[in-house]
Image (tube, rainbow, N blue to C red; front, side, top):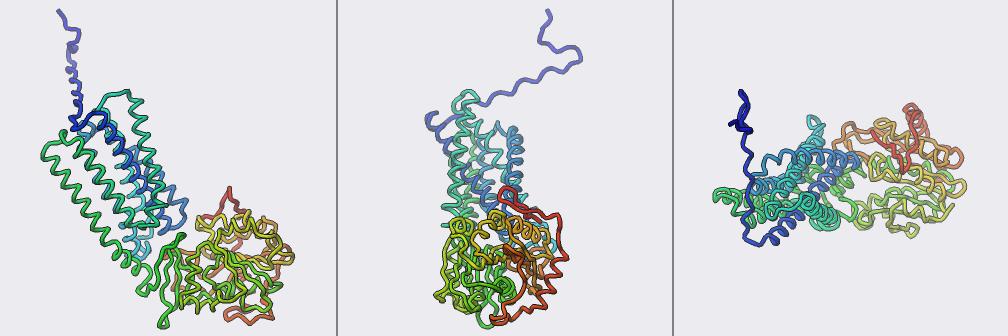
Length: 550
Protein backbone atom coordinates (compact mmCIF):
# COMPACT_ATOMS: atom_id res chain seq x y z
CA UNK A 1 0.00 0.00 0.00
CA UNK A 2 1.35 3.44 -0.94
CA UNK A 3 1.51 6.07 1.80
CA UNK A 4 -0.09 9.21 0.33
CA UNK A 5 2.06 11.37 2.66
CA UNK A 6 5.34 9.75 1.59
CA UNK A 7 7.69 12.03 -0.40
CA UNK A 8 7.96 11.47 -4.13
CA UNK A 9 11.11 9.76 -5.39
CA UNK A 10 14.01 12.18 -5.26
CA UNK A 11 12.12 14.62 -3.04
CA UNK A 12 13.40 15.47 0.47
CA UNK A 13 11.08 14.53 3.34
CA UNK A 14 9.09 17.50 4.72
CA UNK A 15 10.41 19.22 7.83
CA UNK A 16 8.34 18.71 10.94
CA UNK A 17 6.42 21.81 12.05
CA UNK A 18 8.13 23.59 14.96
CA UNK A 19 6.57 22.79 18.28
CA UNK A 20 4.50 25.64 19.68
CA UNK A 21 5.90 27.14 22.84
CA UNK A 22 3.66 26.13 25.70
CA UNK A 23 1.67 28.43 27.97
CA UNK A 24 3.65 30.61 30.34
CA UNK A 25 4.07 29.32 33.87
CA UNK A 26 2.97 32.37 35.81
CA UNK A 27 3.16 33.04 39.55
CA UNK A 28 -0.23 34.80 39.31
CA UNK A 29 -3.60 34.16 37.73
CA UNK A 30 -3.78 34.62 33.92
CA UNK A 31 -6.03 37.67 34.22
CA UNK A 32 -3.58 39.38 36.56
CA UNK A 33 -0.66 38.38 34.36
CA UNK A 34 -2.34 39.83 31.30
CA UNK A 35 -2.98 43.11 33.13
CA UNK A 36 0.67 43.30 34.18
CA UNK A 37 1.85 42.80 30.60
CA UNK A 38 -0.43 45.60 29.38
CA UNK A 39 0.86 47.81 32.22
CA UNK A 40 4.40 47.09 31.02
CA UNK A 41 3.36 48.04 27.48
CA UNK A 42 1.98 51.32 28.86
CA UNK A 43 5.21 52.23 30.69
CA UNK A 44 7.53 51.21 27.85
CA UNK A 45 5.48 53.19 25.33
CA UNK A 46 5.65 56.29 27.53
CA UNK A 47 9.43 55.93 27.83
CA UNK A 48 9.83 55.39 24.08
CA UNK A 49 8.01 58.60 23.24
CA UNK A 50 10.08 60.55 25.76
CA UNK A 51 13.25 59.35 23.99
CA UNK A 52 11.77 60.47 20.67
CA UNK A 53 10.78 63.93 21.92
CA UNK A 54 14.10 64.36 23.68
CA UNK A 55 15.98 63.73 20.42
CA UNK A 56 13.80 66.28 18.60
CA UNK A 57 14.17 68.90 21.34
CA UNK A 58 17.92 68.53 21.78
CA UNK A 59 18.59 68.41 18.04
CA UNK A 60 16.53 71.57 17.54
CA UNK A 61 18.42 73.28 20.36
CA UNK A 62 21.86 72.26 19.10
CA UNK A 63 21.27 72.40 15.35
CA UNK A 64 18.27 74.69 14.86
CA UNK A 65 15.40 74.30 12.36
CA UNK A 66 13.04 72.21 14.47
CA UNK A 67 10.93 71.13 11.47
CA UNK A 68 13.92 69.49 9.79
CA UNK A 69 15.13 67.83 12.98
CA UNK A 70 11.65 66.52 13.84
CA UNK A 71 11.25 65.16 10.32
CA UNK A 72 14.60 63.39 10.47
CA UNK A 73 13.95 61.85 13.89
CA UNK A 74 10.38 60.75 13.19
CA UNK A 75 10.97 59.33 9.71
CA UNK A 76 14.10 57.41 10.69
CA UNK A 77 12.53 56.15 13.90
CA UNK A 78 9.33 54.92 12.25
CA UNK A 79 11.34 53.18 9.53
CA UNK A 80 13.57 51.56 12.15
CA UNK A 81 10.53 50.41 14.14
CA UNK A 82 9.33 48.47 11.10
CA UNK A 83 12.73 46.87 10.66
CA UNK A 84 12.88 46.04 14.38
CA UNK A 85 9.48 44.35 14.24
CA UNK A 86 10.62 42.16 11.34
CA UNK A 87 13.84 41.18 13.08
CA UNK A 88 12.02 40.38 16.33
CA UNK A 89 10.03 37.60 14.64
CA UNK A 90 13.07 35.38 14.97
CA UNK A 91 13.18 35.90 18.75
CA UNK A 92 9.62 34.86 19.58
CA UNK A 93 10.59 31.41 20.86
CA UNK A 94 12.65 33.19 23.52
CA UNK A 95 10.29 36.14 23.92
CA UNK A 96 10.75 36.70 27.64
CA UNK A 97 14.54 36.85 27.77
CA UNK A 98 14.69 38.74 24.45
CA UNK A 99 12.25 41.36 25.70
CA UNK A 100 14.24 41.79 28.93
CA UNK A 101 17.49 42.25 27.03
CA UNK A 102 15.92 44.70 24.58
CA UNK A 103 14.48 46.84 27.39
CA UNK A 104 17.82 47.00 29.17
CA UNK A 105 19.54 48.05 25.95
CA UNK A 106 16.82 50.57 25.12
CA UNK A 107 17.06 52.11 28.59
CA UNK A 108 20.82 52.53 28.23
CA UNK A 109 20.74 53.90 24.67
CA UNK A 110 17.66 56.09 25.08
CA UNK A 111 18.48 57.26 28.59
CA UNK A 112 22.03 58.20 27.67
CA UNK A 113 21.27 59.72 24.25
CA UNK A 114 20.83 63.31 25.47
CA UNK A 115 24.08 63.28 27.41
CA UNK A 116 25.97 61.71 24.51
CA UNK A 117 24.67 64.24 21.98
CA UNK A 118 25.41 67.18 24.24
CA UNK A 119 28.88 65.87 25.08
CA UNK A 120 29.92 65.52 21.46
CA UNK A 121 28.50 68.95 20.66
CA UNK A 122 30.32 70.59 23.58
CA UNK A 123 33.73 69.02 23.15
CA UNK A 124 34.10 69.01 19.37
CA UNK A 125 33.72 72.73 18.84
CA UNK A 126 30.06 72.66 17.83
CA UNK A 127 30.45 70.25 14.88
CA UNK A 128 33.03 72.36 13.14
CA UNK A 129 35.80 70.99 10.93
CA UNK A 130 35.71 67.21 10.55
CA UNK A 131 32.50 67.18 12.59
CA UNK A 132 30.66 69.39 10.06
CA UNK A 133 28.15 66.60 9.32
CA UNK A 134 28.36 65.07 12.78
CA UNK A 135 25.11 66.29 14.32
CA UNK A 136 22.80 64.77 11.78
CA UNK A 137 24.81 61.54 11.59
CA UNK A 138 24.70 61.09 15.35
CA UNK A 139 21.03 62.05 15.44
CA UNK A 140 20.23 59.47 12.76
CA UNK A 141 22.28 56.82 14.60
CA UNK A 142 20.37 57.32 17.85
CA UNK A 143 17.03 57.51 16.05
CA UNK A 144 17.82 54.31 14.19
CA UNK A 145 18.96 52.42 17.29
CA UNK A 146 16.04 53.54 19.45
CA UNK A 147 13.56 52.84 16.66
CA UNK A 148 14.90 49.31 16.14
CA UNK A 149 14.57 48.53 19.83
CA UNK A 150 11.09 50.03 20.17
CA UNK A 151 9.90 48.19 17.07
CA UNK A 152 11.17 44.89 18.44
CA UNK A 153 8.99 45.27 21.54
CA UNK A 154 5.63 44.75 19.83
CA UNK A 155 6.04 41.21 18.39
CA UNK A 156 7.63 40.01 21.63
CA UNK A 157 4.91 41.53 23.78
CA UNK A 158 2.29 40.00 21.48
CA UNK A 159 3.90 36.60 21.97
CA UNK A 160 4.02 37.03 25.75
CA UNK A 161 0.41 38.13 26.03
CA UNK A 162 -0.73 35.23 23.83
CA UNK A 163 1.19 32.78 25.97
CA UNK A 164 -0.75 33.91 29.01
CA UNK A 165 -4.13 33.32 27.40
CA UNK A 166 -4.84 32.58 23.75
CA UNK A 167 -7.30 34.94 22.07
CA UNK A 168 -8.09 35.99 18.53
CA UNK A 169 -5.34 38.04 16.93
CA UNK A 170 -7.56 41.09 16.41
CA UNK A 171 -8.49 41.29 20.09
CA UNK A 172 -4.90 40.87 21.22
CA UNK A 173 -3.70 43.58 18.82
CA UNK A 174 -6.44 45.95 19.98
CA UNK A 175 -5.55 45.51 23.65
CA UNK A 176 -1.82 45.83 23.00
CA UNK A 177 -2.06 48.97 20.91
CA UNK A 178 -4.59 50.59 23.23
CA UNK A 179 -2.09 50.30 26.10
CA UNK A 180 0.71 51.43 23.77
CA UNK A 181 -1.09 54.55 22.55
CA UNK A 182 -2.28 55.60 26.00
CA UNK A 183 1.29 55.22 27.28
CA UNK A 184 2.54 57.35 24.37
CA UNK A 185 0.02 60.04 25.33
CA UNK A 186 1.27 60.09 28.92
CA UNK A 187 4.91 60.19 27.83
CA UNK A 188 4.18 62.94 25.29
CA UNK A 189 2.55 65.12 27.93
CA UNK A 190 5.04 64.33 30.69
CA UNK A 191 8.05 65.45 28.64
CA UNK A 192 7.18 69.14 28.05
CA UNK A 193 5.09 69.72 31.19
CA UNK A 194 6.95 67.69 33.82
CA UNK A 195 10.35 66.28 32.87
CA UNK A 196 11.73 69.21 30.87
CA UNK A 197 10.80 72.09 33.23
CA UNK A 198 11.52 70.23 36.49
CA UNK A 199 14.52 68.05 35.62
CA UNK A 200 15.91 69.33 32.32
CA UNK A 201 16.79 67.31 29.26
CA UNK A 202 19.71 65.35 30.68
CA UNK A 203 18.33 64.27 34.07
CA UNK A 204 14.82 63.81 32.68
CA UNK A 205 16.01 61.41 30.00
CA UNK A 206 18.21 59.49 32.43
CA UNK A 207 15.27 59.10 34.81
CA UNK A 208 13.15 57.84 31.92
CA UNK A 209 15.80 55.21 31.17
CA UNK A 210 15.75 54.11 34.80
CA UNK A 211 11.97 53.72 34.73
CA UNK A 212 12.28 51.80 31.48
CA UNK A 213 14.81 49.27 32.77
CA UNK A 214 12.92 48.75 36.03
CA UNK A 215 9.62 48.16 34.21
CA UNK A 216 11.12 45.77 31.67
CA UNK A 217 13.17 43.88 34.23
CA UNK A 218 10.28 43.57 36.70
CA UNK A 219 7.96 42.23 34.01
CA UNK A 220 10.35 39.53 32.85
CA UNK A 221 12.03 38.59 36.13
CA UNK A 222 8.81 38.80 38.09
CA UNK A 223 6.11 37.46 35.79
CA UNK A 224 8.03 35.21 33.37
CA UNK A 225 10.92 34.13 35.58
CA UNK A 226 9.96 30.45 35.28
CA UNK A 227 10.56 30.66 31.53
CA UNK A 228 14.19 31.60 32.11
CA UNK A 229 17.01 29.31 33.07
CA UNK A 230 18.77 30.09 36.36
CA UNK A 231 21.76 31.34 34.41
CA UNK A 232 19.51 33.51 32.20
CA UNK A 233 17.83 35.02 35.25
CA UNK A 234 21.13 35.98 36.84
CA UNK A 235 22.52 37.39 33.58
CA UNK A 236 19.42 39.48 32.99
CA UNK A 237 19.36 40.68 36.60
CA UNK A 238 23.04 41.64 36.39
CA UNK A 239 22.50 43.51 33.11
CA UNK A 240 19.55 45.43 34.53
CA UNK A 241 21.46 46.37 37.68
CA UNK A 242 24.45 47.46 35.59
CA UNK A 243 22.28 49.67 33.38
CA UNK A 244 20.50 51.09 36.41
CA UNK A 245 23.86 51.79 38.04
CA UNK A 246 25.19 53.56 34.94
CA UNK A 247 22.09 55.70 34.60
CA UNK A 248 22.11 56.54 38.30
CA UNK A 249 25.78 57.50 38.22
CA UNK A 250 25.20 59.68 35.16
CA UNK A 251 22.25 61.38 36.89
CA UNK A 252 24.36 62.05 39.99
CA UNK A 253 27.07 63.64 37.82
CA UNK A 254 24.65 65.46 35.49
CA UNK A 255 25.09 68.80 37.24
CA UNK A 256 28.90 68.69 37.03
CA UNK A 257 28.70 67.41 33.45
CA UNK A 258 26.37 70.22 32.41
CA UNK A 259 28.61 72.86 33.97
CA UNK A 260 31.69 71.45 32.26
CA UNK A 261 29.89 71.18 28.93
CA UNK A 262 28.56 74.71 29.28
CA UNK A 263 32.09 76.00 29.85
CA UNK A 264 33.28 74.06 26.81
CA UNK A 265 30.58 75.72 24.70
CA UNK A 266 30.51 79.24 26.12
CA UNK A 267 33.98 79.62 27.65
CA UNK A 268 35.23 79.85 31.21
CA UNK A 269 33.50 83.08 32.22
CA UNK A 270 29.87 81.96 32.41
CA UNK A 271 28.21 84.20 35.00
CA UNK A 272 24.53 83.39 34.62
CA UNK A 273 22.93 80.20 33.28
CA UNK A 274 19.23 79.68 33.76
CA UNK A 275 16.29 78.06 32.00
CA UNK A 276 13.23 80.25 31.87
CA UNK A 277 9.86 78.95 30.82
CA UNK A 278 10.79 79.85 27.24
CA UNK A 279 14.49 79.15 26.66
CA UNK A 280 17.96 78.71 28.14
CA UNK A 281 19.63 82.05 28.93
CA UNK A 282 23.40 82.31 29.43
CA UNK A 283 25.44 85.44 30.22
CA UNK A 284 29.20 85.41 29.90
CA UNK A 285 31.74 88.16 30.58
CA UNK A 286 30.72 91.64 31.57
CA UNK A 287 33.30 91.88 34.36
CA UNK A 288 37.01 92.75 34.58
CA UNK A 289 37.00 94.31 31.14
CA UNK A 290 35.55 91.26 29.37
CA UNK A 291 32.77 92.00 26.89
CA UNK A 292 29.33 90.76 27.85
CA UNK A 293 27.73 88.07 25.68
CA UNK A 294 24.12 86.95 25.86
CA UNK A 295 23.17 83.50 24.54
CA UNK A 296 19.58 82.35 24.05
CA UNK A 297 19.14 78.62 23.45
CA UNK A 298 22.77 78.33 22.43
CA UNK A 299 22.66 81.21 19.93
CA UNK A 300 24.69 84.34 20.52
CA UNK A 301 22.13 87.15 20.56
CA UNK A 302 24.30 89.93 21.99
CA UNK A 303 28.05 90.28 21.60
CA UNK A 304 29.68 93.06 23.55
CA UNK A 305 32.21 93.38 20.73
CA UNK A 306 29.73 94.58 18.14
CA UNK A 307 26.21 94.89 19.56
CA UNK A 308 26.25 98.67 19.31
CA UNK A 309 26.77 98.53 15.55
CA UNK A 310 23.84 96.14 15.20
CA UNK A 311 21.44 98.11 17.39
CA UNK A 312 22.36 101.50 15.96
CA UNK A 313 21.79 100.16 12.45
CA UNK A 314 18.48 98.64 13.48
CA UNK A 315 17.06 101.69 15.28
CA UNK A 316 18.47 104.96 13.94
CA UNK A 317 17.30 104.83 10.28
CA UNK A 318 13.75 104.05 11.45
CA UNK A 319 13.78 106.99 13.88
CA UNK A 320 14.48 109.55 11.14
CA UNK A 321 10.96 110.98 11.15
CA UNK A 322 8.08 111.20 13.62
CA UNK A 323 8.93 108.97 16.58
CA UNK A 324 6.89 110.01 19.60
CA UNK A 325 5.38 106.52 20.00
CA UNK A 326 7.66 103.52 19.42
CA UNK A 327 6.89 99.80 19.53
CA UNK A 328 9.72 97.28 19.97
CA UNK A 329 8.84 93.65 19.23
CA UNK A 330 11.39 91.46 20.97
CA UNK A 331 14.43 93.30 22.29
CA UNK A 332 13.96 92.14 25.86
CA UNK A 333 17.65 92.89 26.56
CA UNK A 334 16.82 96.62 26.48
CA UNK A 335 19.50 97.48 23.94
CA UNK A 336 17.14 98.60 21.18
CA UNK A 337 15.26 100.66 23.78
CA UNK A 338 18.57 102.29 24.73
CA UNK A 339 19.04 103.55 21.18
CA UNK A 340 15.41 104.70 20.91
CA UNK A 341 15.73 106.76 24.09
CA UNK A 342 18.70 108.65 22.66
CA UNK A 343 16.32 110.49 20.29
CA UNK A 344 14.61 113.65 21.55
CA UNK A 345 10.84 113.71 21.32
CA UNK A 346 10.21 110.09 22.33
CA UNK A 347 7.13 110.01 24.55
CA UNK A 348 6.42 106.30 24.96
CA UNK A 349 8.24 103.04 24.19
CA UNK A 350 6.30 99.77 24.34
CA UNK A 351 8.43 96.61 24.50
CA UNK A 352 6.65 93.31 23.74
CA UNK A 353 8.91 90.43 24.84
CA UNK A 354 7.97 86.76 25.09
CA UNK A 355 10.47 85.85 27.83
CA UNK A 356 10.01 87.64 31.14
CA UNK A 357 13.28 86.08 32.34
CA UNK A 358 15.31 88.05 29.79
CA UNK A 359 13.62 91.29 30.84
CA UNK A 360 14.28 90.47 34.49
CA UNK A 361 17.99 90.02 33.73
CA UNK A 362 18.04 93.26 31.73
CA UNK A 363 16.63 95.06 34.78
CA UNK A 364 18.82 93.47 37.45
CA UNK A 365 22.10 92.12 36.06
CA UNK A 366 24.74 94.81 36.66
CA UNK A 367 26.66 94.24 33.44
CA UNK A 368 23.55 94.05 31.25
CA UNK A 369 21.96 97.12 32.84
CA UNK A 370 25.17 99.06 32.23
CA UNK A 371 25.15 97.94 28.61
CA UNK A 372 21.51 98.91 28.02
CA UNK A 373 21.95 102.24 29.81
CA UNK A 374 19.35 101.36 32.46
CA UNK A 375 16.69 101.67 29.78
CA UNK A 376 14.06 99.94 31.88
CA UNK A 377 14.43 102.54 34.62
CA UNK A 378 13.07 105.17 32.23
CA UNK A 379 9.36 105.79 32.96
CA UNK A 380 8.62 106.09 29.26
CA UNK A 381 9.42 102.39 28.73
CA UNK A 382 6.56 99.95 29.26
CA UNK A 383 7.07 96.17 29.01
CA UNK A 384 4.46 93.57 28.09
CA UNK A 385 5.22 89.86 28.33
CA UNK A 386 3.44 88.32 25.35
CA UNK A 387 3.86 86.60 22.01
CA UNK A 388 4.40 89.37 19.46
CA UNK A 389 1.98 87.87 16.93
CA UNK A 390 -0.84 87.46 19.44
CA UNK A 391 -0.21 90.92 20.90
CA UNK A 392 -0.35 92.63 17.50
CA UNK A 393 -3.73 91.07 16.78
CA UNK A 394 -5.16 93.12 19.63
CA UNK A 395 -3.01 96.23 19.19
CA UNK A 396 -4.82 99.51 18.50
CA UNK A 397 -4.65 100.62 14.87
CA UNK A 398 -2.43 103.54 13.81
CA UNK A 399 -0.94 103.73 17.32
CA UNK A 400 2.81 103.87 16.61
CA UNK A 401 5.12 106.09 14.63
CA UNK A 402 7.88 103.48 14.59
CA UNK A 403 7.72 99.66 14.85
CA UNK A 404 11.07 97.93 15.45
CA UNK A 405 11.29 94.16 15.05
CA UNK A 406 14.32 92.97 17.04
CA UNK A 407 13.57 89.28 16.63
CA UNK A 408 15.56 86.07 16.08
CA UNK A 409 16.68 85.02 12.63
CA UNK A 410 13.83 84.10 10.20
CA UNK A 411 15.65 80.85 9.40
CA UNK A 412 14.89 79.57 12.91
CA UNK A 413 11.62 77.66 12.65
CA UNK A 414 10.17 79.01 15.88
CA UNK A 415 10.48 82.56 14.46
CA UNK A 416 8.99 81.87 11.03
CA UNK A 417 5.50 83.12 11.90
CA UNK A 418 7.05 86.44 12.99
CA UNK A 419 8.37 86.87 9.43
CA UNK A 420 5.14 85.95 7.65
CA UNK A 421 3.00 88.19 5.48
CA UNK A 422 0.20 88.00 8.02
CA UNK A 423 2.50 89.31 10.76
CA UNK A 424 3.62 92.27 8.65
CA UNK A 425 -0.01 93.01 7.83
CA UNK A 426 -0.70 93.33 11.56
CA UNK A 427 2.37 95.55 11.99
CA UNK A 428 1.21 97.73 9.08
CA UNK A 429 -2.17 98.19 10.78
CA UNK A 430 -0.40 99.39 13.96
CA UNK A 431 1.56 102.06 12.07
CA UNK A 432 0.35 105.65 12.15
CA UNK A 433 0.22 107.57 8.85
CA UNK A 434 3.83 108.28 7.90
CA UNK A 435 5.06 105.60 10.30
CA UNK A 436 8.01 103.31 9.59
CA UNK A 437 8.73 99.63 10.20
CA UNK A 438 12.22 98.15 10.45
CA UNK A 439 12.97 94.42 10.39
CA UNK A 440 16.12 92.51 11.20
CA UNK A 441 16.35 90.15 8.21
CA UNK A 442 19.54 88.13 8.78
CA UNK A 443 22.78 88.21 6.81
CA UNK A 444 22.29 89.18 3.18
CA UNK A 445 25.73 87.92 2.15
CA UNK A 446 25.53 84.52 3.87
CA UNK A 447 21.85 83.78 3.25
CA UNK A 448 20.64 86.10 0.49
CA UNK A 449 17.48 84.11 -0.31
CA UNK A 450 16.26 84.41 3.28
CA UNK A 451 17.06 88.14 3.30
CA UNK A 452 15.20 88.86 0.06
CA UNK A 453 12.30 86.64 1.11
CA UNK A 454 11.84 88.98 4.08
CA UNK A 455 11.85 91.94 1.71
CA UNK A 456 9.32 90.29 -0.63
CA UNK A 457 7.10 89.39 2.32
CA UNK A 458 7.06 92.94 3.71
CA UNK A 459 6.16 94.28 0.27
CA UNK A 460 3.37 91.69 -0.05
CA UNK A 461 1.86 93.17 3.14
CA UNK A 462 1.36 96.48 1.32
CA UNK A 463 4.50 98.36 2.35
CA UNK A 464 7.29 99.93 0.29
CA UNK A 465 10.78 98.83 1.28
CA UNK A 466 14.40 99.89 1.30
CA UNK A 467 16.74 96.96 2.10
CA UNK A 468 20.07 97.82 3.69
CA UNK A 469 22.90 96.25 5.60
CA UNK A 470 25.88 97.14 7.74
CA UNK A 471 29.18 95.32 7.85
CA UNK A 472 31.81 95.19 10.53
CA UNK A 473 30.50 92.17 12.36
CA UNK A 474 33.15 90.74 14.69
CA UNK A 475 34.64 87.73 12.81
CA UNK A 476 35.61 86.16 16.11
CA UNK A 477 31.95 85.60 16.87
CA UNK A 478 30.70 83.35 14.12
CA UNK A 479 27.38 82.92 15.88
CA UNK A 480 26.17 86.50 15.80
CA UNK A 481 22.64 87.29 16.93
CA UNK A 482 21.10 84.93 14.41
CA UNK A 483 23.49 81.97 14.09
CA UNK A 484 24.12 78.94 16.25
CA UNK A 485 27.65 78.46 17.67
CA UNK A 486 29.91 76.62 15.25
CA UNK A 487 27.72 77.28 12.21
CA UNK A 488 29.63 76.90 8.96
CA UNK A 489 30.40 80.32 7.58
CA UNK A 490 30.70 83.38 9.79
CA UNK A 491 28.30 86.16 8.78
CA UNK A 492 30.16 89.46 8.41
CA UNK A 493 27.10 91.69 8.16
CA UNK A 494 23.56 92.32 9.36
CA UNK A 495 20.73 92.84 6.93
CA UNK A 496 17.66 95.02 7.57
CA UNK A 497 14.51 96.09 5.75
CA UNK A 498 13.09 99.59 6.31
CA UNK A 499 9.44 99.90 5.24
CA UNK A 500 6.57 102.39 5.13
CA UNK A 501 3.35 102.96 3.21
CA UNK A 502 5.27 105.19 0.81
CA UNK A 503 8.89 104.52 -0.15
CA UNK A 504 11.00 105.50 2.88
CA UNK A 505 14.21 107.49 2.69
CA UNK A 506 17.21 105.82 4.29
CA UNK A 507 18.83 108.52 6.41
CA UNK A 508 19.79 109.42 9.96
CA UNK A 509 17.92 111.84 12.22
CA UNK A 510 19.93 115.11 12.27
CA UNK A 511 18.31 116.15 15.56
CA UNK A 512 19.50 113.03 17.41
CA UNK A 513 22.98 112.40 18.82
CA UNK A 514 25.21 111.04 16.11
CA UNK A 515 25.56 107.23 16.19
CA UNK A 516 29.00 106.02 17.15
CA UNK A 517 29.25 103.38 14.42
CA UNK A 518 27.13 104.74 11.55
CA UNK A 519 27.69 107.49 9.00
CA UNK A 520 25.39 108.39 6.09
CA UNK A 521 28.14 107.62 3.57
CA UNK A 522 28.87 104.17 5.00
CA UNK A 523 25.16 103.40 5.20
CA UNK A 524 24.69 104.31 1.54
CA UNK A 525 27.67 102.21 0.48
CA UNK A 526 26.51 99.19 2.44
CA UNK A 527 23.03 99.56 0.98
CA UNK A 528 24.40 99.46 -2.56
CA UNK A 529 26.27 96.29 -1.60
CA UNK A 530 23.05 94.75 -0.30
CA UNK A 531 21.22 95.50 -3.55
CA UNK A 532 23.85 93.56 -5.48
CA UNK A 533 22.78 90.36 -3.69
CA UNK A 534 19.14 90.65 -4.81
CA UNK A 535 17.35 87.34 -5.47
CA UNK A 536 14.60 88.23 -7.98
CA UNK A 537 12.85 84.88 -7.57
CA UNK A 538 12.27 85.32 -3.81
CA UNK A 539 8.58 85.00 -2.99
CA UNK A 540 6.54 86.08 0.05
CA UNK A 541 6.32 83.78 3.06
CA UNK A 542 2.95 83.10 4.69
CA UNK A 543 1.79 81.10 7.68
CA UNK A 544 0.52 78.35 5.38
CA UNK A 545 3.52 78.50 3.04
CA UNK A 546 6.73 79.37 4.93
CA UNK A 547 9.65 79.93 2.58
CA UNK A 548 12.59 80.53 4.91
CA UNK A 549 15.15 77.81 4.29
CA UNK A 550 18.79 77.67 3.36
